[in-house]
Image (cartoon, rainbow, N blue to C red; front, side, top):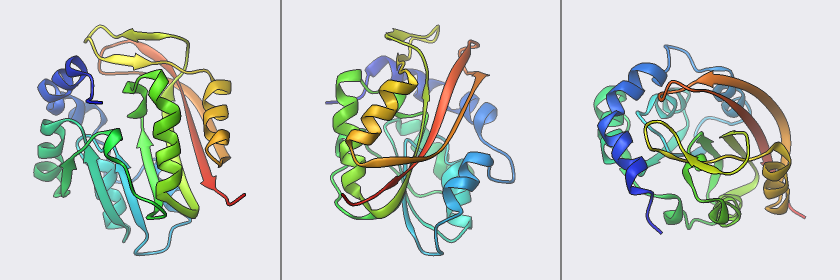
Length: 201
């Protein structure tokens, strides 16, 4: 299954604007710092939907081995140009590793996946994590599926829906934050961020 063409077109056209708005600062933010904190130097991490590459650059600077992927060719190009991140073009469906990563960072990327595909994608993420691996996910909260004013497709989830998906995949929630932010389209949207750990059994 390929990524939504309209959504990709928006990110390819507005990659520079996105990087300016959400490209990060000189220091990792709260959620990224929390994600990286338990990982030893040399830990292998996946940035699933790396965008312009700021988070991947922070991970690499912290001594982590980063695999950065994005479905947008322009985002991948920008990640290399702006942050020196070696990223590659890939979709959620391309994740087929098993017990490979110590951490997976999916920061507001899976919200563009179809609702029906979320159980499959989260199961693939859990399989790709080693036991004790850490998974960070950020999603916009709400119900239904809709296009924003820029015509990007969004799957909105409730907290209960998302936590059930994670639990069903064997991912145990260890931290939670909720808030809201004005995004690229100019709308003020509610979000949830969950940090989880893969445990056997």
